[in-house]
Image (tube, rainbow, N blue to C red; front, top):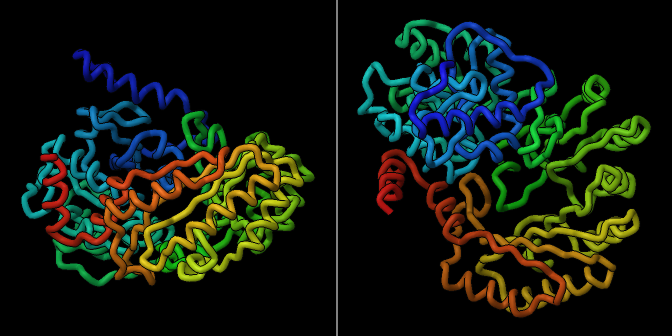
Length: 466
């Protein structure tokens, strides 16, 4: 790629290039057929924490497609690829991985910046093919049905060969006709409204092809150990859209760890503590002195060995997600977690040397009373008495999602949310750090999650004007 001459383009080019240089390749991906843009519509730091951004590229490149990754910044205008710093204008096929509802605004802004109409009805034959997939489409694909030419629902592993064959064709009409033959494709544009969801087997085991210091899993090689969730938490879409749950085979997983054991690992799953072969895996990790982090774990299922091994990998804190501020609220949330189980897990944490702990809570349910908030404060005092020196608490308002038991609930209004957070602020014991998620951001998430069809286009257009 020839370096751009104007200063703004050169600044953007260098910004992307510096991230590319930060990546240490684990293995090379190379394809020489059709150019495909794989777009994570958020910052590089968010994108690099998503295994999907690398794994989708891996699956398609195996079929010889020239897949290059893109990320989003508000100030971008050219949008250069990470691999070769090629402007996105040179790509005929744009794949968006739609991981978070709020990224809809970034998808729309990116299309607008590149002169692509938001509605598929207004596009011409020279515009790129817009395909949108990812977790959000699993519980409400209609959010993007008027924006995407094609919506991909489910896991790519189920049809990666057929999908790749369609994308590798030279003629746009042939590509589109072949995409319509894929069971997991939904397209309002072409009136293909019947589709099949599919959960992919973790064989081969999904893993990233690079590591970077900018990832939330700093310099760790991401590997997926489980997909889906066996739990039934009423606020979470994963337990209701990713069924049946799939786990990596122990032998395959150990073989992967052994092959790359000079690296540190980030183990990706809804919760590692539900992995059916966890004890055997921890024995291998301990015997081979493997250093690792986990994306999530259940405090009622942690054991001394797991926390001890995490502590060895320079973990200064571990995270507990009670979600409900009282036992009553956890029961309403179907969290299946008792205060006694939480305390037991915290006691194990102290035993192995953890002095810092983080908690995640969801508030804003109509059943909450002052007594529930008092129970939260009493619990935090109990945590401090266990000897934790730093206690961090993150508070989010409930965002009811479609496809969950909470689908028909309404989100708490801002005034009431601020009233409840004010009570927490004045009541928490000294030594507890509080972090409140932006109400505005969570409200946008709620609004987007319930959009469908042309509502989505009107919604993002209104956001452009704010």
